[in-house]
Image 1 (spheres, helix red, strand yellow):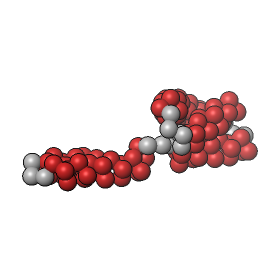
Image 2 (cartoon, helix red, strand yellow; image 1 turned 30 degrees about the vertical axis):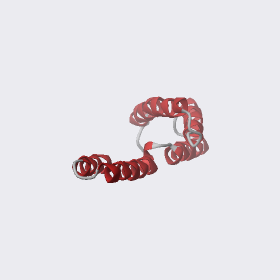
Image 3 (tube, helix red, strand yellow; image 1 turned 90 degrees about the vertical axis):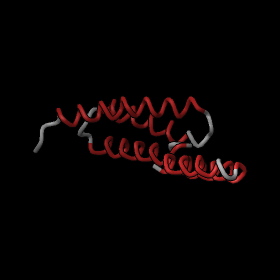
Image 4 (cartoon, helix red, strand yellow; image 1 turned 120 degrees about the horizontal axis):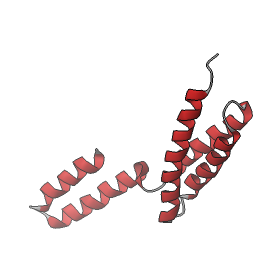
Length: 110
């Protein structure tokens, strides 16, 4: 939503002051990237910690948690600006979340 509202403000401003519109675009882009567009460190840390906890409680498949350790580590590594890391993390998280959901549905409830 910040990107949408910000872009609308940039477009409106561009008709009257192109230089200020360029500056505003840089500011809006910086805020959007800072809130999660630029790297996946927080998401990677979250997946990593959940996987460590999952290995300790031993309720779901170990391979799922090992995948989570890998995906979480890649997410943390996105602090280094390499597009491939973000792509691996994003696709890996889709696989990890899907597997996690199926595993949780198959786990008997006590």
